[in-house]
Length: 95
Image (cartoon, rainbow, N blue to C red; front, side):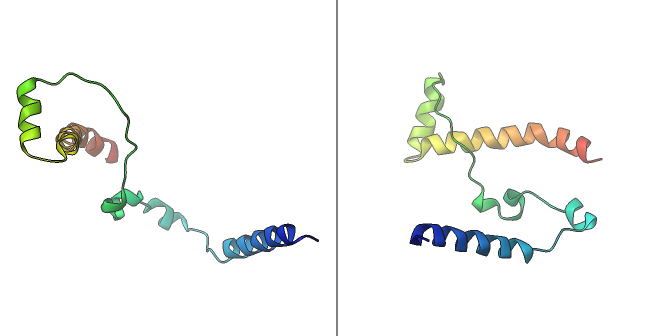
């Protein structure tokens, strides 16, 4: 048996053993699961998409005047407004 095949078999067996040690979730535990971004929000990294938009010149100048990272700041303002809009809908869904 060549070394690569032996290594692959060893790793597969090791992975199976790791899965055996993971206890199954009870229904109560499953109900209480939350997305990782809620538990540790600083680890959440949304997928970025490149777009081209037109922004009023005065708005763009305002954000640029705040210094480096103006695009991130614009994104933060948009996210804050999106969450304000989404919050009432989310509350209705939880009831």
